[in-house]
Length: 108
Image (tube, rainbow, N blue to C red; front, side, top):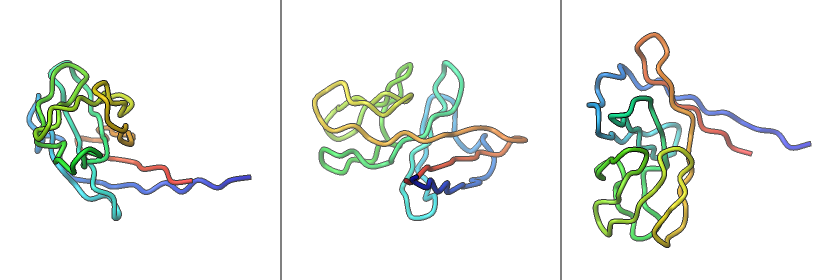
């Protein structure tokens, strides 16, 4: 049987992330970008583009996709899959709990 560790980050008020944008955080030792798309909800991805280390939290958010600000690679906010030819990024659980942003990372 494999064990799964969950690292939880309580990152403060959700309102610190403007609708339609993302912000970077550190959860444990993992850089995480959290996004509030205009369509609603919260999404969390590994904050670093695997192509050249671009800061995904600074990317343009369009619907359910974020575009890396360096070379325009597009990543799904839902599952971290890349539609433009570079490696995928990890996707994490992000939720609002009593007005607070909570991100959970699963490590196996």
